Amino acid sequence: MPKETSNTIEDAIDVKPKPKARKKPTGYRVKSKFQIWCRRNRERVRDQYNLSGHDIQKKLCELWWDAEENPNRGQRPEKKSRSPSAL
Image 1 (cartoon, helix red, strand yellow):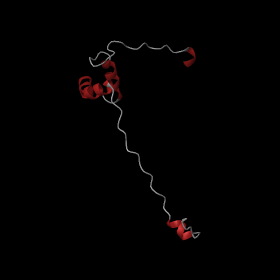
Image 2: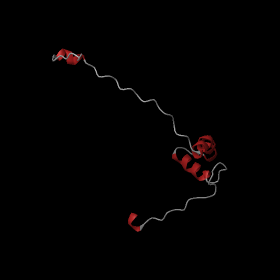
Image 3: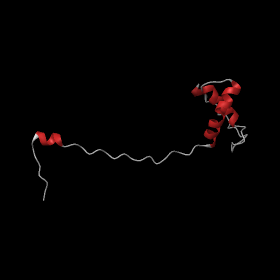
Image 4: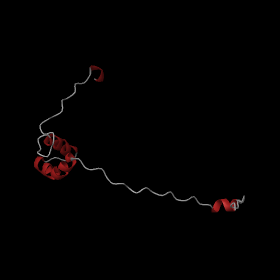
């Protein structure tokens, strides 16, 4: 049997849309070795060099190149020269 329909406004107001089902989170990305190393050494660097804020991260980046946990230890990337048009 087909559903009965009504053309009254009262019936249209009572109809509520179904709530959409939320997707369950699938998990988080795996942290890189650099992120894990930074978390472990952040307090030490902050206290040893008396830094705060963004300066801590800059110092951690410098120290990462010589860290034992770094798989590319000692291989610093080459600095790219800027083109004259970019200046």
